[in-house]
Length: 196
Image (cartoon, rainbow, N blue to C red; front, side, top):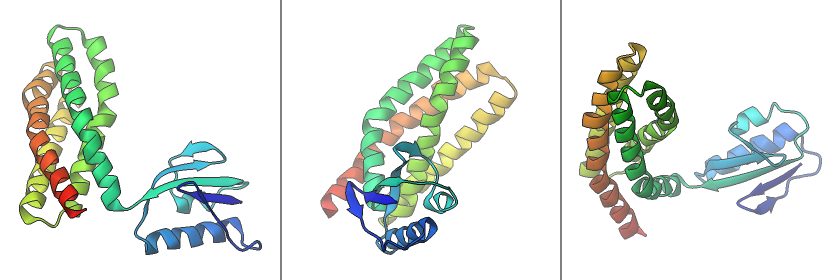
Protein backbone atom coordinates (compact mmCIF):
# COMPACT_ATOMS: atom_id res chain seq x y z
CA UNK A 1 0.00 0.00 0.00
CA UNK A 2 1.32 3.41 -0.97
CA UNK A 3 0.73 6.28 1.49
CA UNK A 4 1.37 9.92 0.64
CA UNK A 5 0.96 12.78 3.09
CA UNK A 6 1.02 16.30 1.65
CA UNK A 7 2.42 14.86 -1.62
CA UNK A 8 5.29 13.09 0.18
CA UNK A 9 5.42 9.28 0.16
CA UNK A 10 5.66 7.71 3.61
CA UNK A 11 7.48 4.39 3.76
CA UNK A 12 6.50 1.57 6.10
CA UNK A 13 7.99 -1.84 6.80
CA UNK A 14 7.15 -4.26 3.99
CA UNK A 15 5.55 -6.90 6.21
CA UNK A 16 3.06 -4.51 7.86
CA UNK A 17 -0.62 -5.14 7.29
CA UNK A 18 -2.96 -2.46 6.00
CA UNK A 19 -4.50 -1.93 9.44
CA UNK A 20 -1.05 -1.73 11.08
CA UNK A 21 0.01 0.93 8.59
CA UNK A 22 -3.13 2.94 9.22
CA UNK A 23 -2.75 2.66 13.00
CA UNK A 24 0.88 3.80 12.78
CA UNK A 25 -0.17 6.67 10.51
CA UNK A 26 -2.92 7.69 12.97
CA UNK A 27 -0.46 7.64 15.83
CA UNK A 28 2.08 9.77 13.95
CA UNK A 29 -0.54 12.36 13.02
CA UNK A 30 -1.79 12.54 16.60
CA UNK A 31 1.75 12.87 17.94
CA UNK A 32 2.46 15.77 15.57
CA UNK A 33 -0.97 17.36 16.28
CA UNK A 34 -2.05 17.13 12.65
CA UNK A 35 -5.56 16.69 11.33
CA UNK A 36 -6.67 15.23 8.01
CA UNK A 37 -8.17 17.91 5.79
CA UNK A 38 -8.65 15.74 2.74
CA UNK A 39 -8.27 12.04 2.02
CA UNK A 40 -8.25 10.05 -1.19
CA UNK A 41 -8.40 6.27 -1.22
CA UNK A 42 -7.39 4.63 -4.48
CA UNK A 43 -7.67 8.07 -6.10
CA UNK A 44 -11.23 8.71 -4.92
CA UNK A 45 -12.09 11.39 -2.36
CA UNK A 46 -13.20 9.88 0.94
CA UNK A 47 -14.84 11.34 4.01
CA UNK A 48 -13.99 8.30 6.14
CA UNK A 49 -11.58 8.87 8.99
CA UNK A 50 -8.45 6.76 9.27
CA UNK A 51 -9.90 4.33 11.81
CA UNK A 52 -12.72 3.55 9.36
CA UNK A 53 -10.21 3.00 6.56
CA UNK A 54 -8.48 0.28 8.60
CA UNK A 55 -11.50 -1.97 8.05
CA UNK A 56 -11.59 -1.57 4.27
CA UNK A 57 -10.12 -4.18 1.94
CA UNK A 58 -7.84 -3.78 -1.05
CA UNK A 59 -6.55 -0.27 -0.48
CA UNK A 60 -3.77 0.34 -2.98
CA UNK A 61 -3.04 3.93 -2.08
CA UNK A 62 -4.01 6.59 0.44
CA UNK A 63 -3.31 10.24 -0.26
CA UNK A 64 -3.76 12.63 2.67
CA UNK A 65 -3.64 16.38 2.97
CA UNK A 66 -2.92 17.23 6.60
CA UNK A 67 -2.44 20.43 8.58
CA UNK A 68 -2.29 21.72 12.11
CA UNK A 69 -5.58 22.76 13.72
CA UNK A 70 -4.33 26.36 13.51
CA UNK A 71 -3.80 26.05 9.75
CA UNK A 72 -7.25 24.51 9.30
CA UNK A 73 -8.91 27.29 11.28
CA UNK A 74 -6.91 30.00 9.50
CA UNK A 75 -7.91 28.58 6.14
CA UNK A 76 -11.53 28.41 7.28
CA UNK A 77 -11.50 32.01 8.49
CA UNK A 78 -9.86 33.19 5.26
CA UNK A 79 -12.50 31.32 3.27
CA UNK A 80 -15.19 32.89 5.45
CA UNK A 81 -14.09 36.38 4.43
CA UNK A 82 -14.99 35.66 0.81
CA UNK A 83 -17.75 33.09 1.31
CA UNK A 84 -19.91 34.72 3.99
CA UNK A 85 -21.00 37.69 1.85
CA UNK A 86 -22.15 35.18 -0.78
CA UNK A 87 -24.02 33.18 1.86
CA UNK A 88 -25.58 36.36 3.20
CA UNK A 89 -26.83 37.38 -0.27
CA UNK A 90 -28.12 33.87 -0.84
CA UNK A 91 -30.07 33.87 2.42
CA UNK A 92 -31.60 37.25 1.57
CA UNK A 93 -32.54 35.94 -1.88
CA UNK A 94 -34.16 32.85 -0.34
CA UNK A 95 -36.15 35.08 2.03
CA UNK A 96 -37.37 37.11 -0.96
CA UNK A 97 -38.44 33.93 -2.79
CA UNK A 98 -40.47 32.82 0.24
CA UNK A 99 -42.01 36.28 0.60
CA UNK A 100 -42.99 36.28 -3.10
CA UNK A 101 -44.62 32.85 -2.78
CA UNK A 102 -41.94 31.18 -4.91
CA UNK A 103 -41.65 28.35 -2.42
CA UNK A 104 -40.24 25.78 -4.84
CA UNK A 105 -37.28 27.99 -5.73
CA UNK A 106 -36.85 29.04 -2.11
CA UNK A 107 -36.80 25.47 -0.83
CA UNK A 108 -34.32 24.40 -3.50
CA UNK A 109 -31.97 27.32 -2.73
CA UNK A 110 -32.41 26.81 1.01
CA UNK A 111 -31.31 23.19 0.70
CA UNK A 112 -28.24 24.36 -1.22
CA UNK A 113 -27.43 26.85 1.58
CA UNK A 114 -27.67 24.31 4.42
CA UNK A 115 -24.09 22.95 4.05
CA UNK A 116 -22.77 26.52 4.15
CA UNK A 117 -24.76 27.27 7.28
CA UNK A 118 -23.43 24.07 8.90
CA UNK A 119 -19.89 24.98 7.87
CA UNK A 120 -20.25 28.39 9.53
CA UNK A 121 -21.29 26.67 12.77
CA UNK A 122 -18.18 24.48 12.60
CA UNK A 123 -15.93 27.51 12.06
CA UNK A 124 -17.43 29.30 15.06
CA UNK A 125 -17.08 26.23 17.29
CA UNK A 126 -13.49 25.66 16.17
CA UNK A 127 -12.57 29.26 16.87
CA UNK A 128 -13.92 28.95 20.42
CA UNK A 129 -11.57 26.02 21.03
CA UNK A 130 -8.58 27.63 19.35
CA UNK A 131 -8.28 31.16 20.66
CA UNK A 132 -6.72 31.73 24.07
CA UNK A 133 -7.35 35.47 23.95
CA UNK A 134 -10.23 35.69 26.44
CA UNK A 135 -12.14 38.52 24.77
CA UNK A 136 -11.82 36.96 21.30
CA UNK A 137 -12.69 33.52 22.64
CA UNK A 138 -15.69 35.00 24.48
CA UNK A 139 -16.82 36.76 21.30
CA UNK A 140 -16.64 33.53 19.30
CA UNK A 141 -18.37 31.60 22.10
CA UNK A 142 -21.18 34.15 22.24
CA UNK A 143 -21.48 34.11 18.44
CA UNK A 144 -21.52 30.29 18.35
CA UNK A 145 -24.28 30.16 20.99
CA UNK A 146 -26.30 32.86 19.23
CA UNK A 147 -25.89 31.14 15.88
CA UNK A 148 -26.89 27.78 17.31
CA UNK A 149 -30.08 29.33 18.71
CA UNK A 150 -30.88 30.90 15.34
CA UNK A 151 -30.43 27.54 13.63
CA UNK A 152 -32.69 25.86 16.20
CA UNK A 153 -35.37 28.46 15.45
CA UNK A 154 -34.84 27.86 11.73
CA UNK A 155 -35.15 24.09 12.15
CA UNK A 156 -38.38 24.46 14.11
CA UNK A 157 -39.83 26.76 11.45
CA UNK A 158 -38.71 24.31 8.75
CA UNK A 159 -40.35 21.38 10.54
CA UNK A 160 -43.57 23.40 10.83
CA UNK A 161 -43.30 24.50 7.19
CA UNK A 162 -43.68 28.07 8.38
CA UNK A 163 -42.16 29.71 5.32
CA UNK A 164 -43.01 33.24 6.45
CA UNK A 165 -41.08 32.69 9.68
CA UNK A 166 -38.20 31.15 7.74
CA UNK A 167 -38.10 34.22 5.50
CA UNK A 168 -38.11 36.52 8.53
CA UNK A 169 -35.36 34.53 10.25
CA UNK A 170 -33.23 34.55 7.12
CA UNK A 171 -33.70 38.24 6.39
CA UNK A 172 -33.79 39.74 9.89
CA UNK A 173 -31.72 37.29 11.95
CA UNK A 174 -29.19 35.27 9.92
CA UNK A 175 -28.23 37.80 7.23
CA UNK A 176 -27.51 40.57 9.78
CA UNK A 177 -25.71 38.06 12.03
CA UNK A 178 -23.32 37.21 9.19
CA UNK A 179 -22.70 40.91 8.62
CA UNK A 180 -21.84 41.33 12.32
CA UNK A 181 -19.42 38.38 12.16
CA UNK A 182 -17.17 39.89 9.53
CA UNK A 183 -15.24 42.26 11.88
CA UNK A 184 -14.79 39.43 14.41
CA UNK A 185 -13.37 37.13 11.74
CA UNK A 186 -11.07 39.83 10.41
CA UNK A 187 -9.86 40.57 13.96
CA UNK A 188 -9.14 36.85 14.46
CA UNK A 189 -7.15 36.72 11.22
CA UNK A 190 -5.16 39.78 12.30
CA UNK A 191 -4.29 38.11 15.62
CA UNK A 192 -3.20 34.92 13.84
CA UNK A 193 -1.05 36.97 11.44
CA UNK A 194 0.62 38.75 14.36
CA UNK A 195 1.61 35.40 15.88
CA UNK A 196 3.41 34.30 12.71
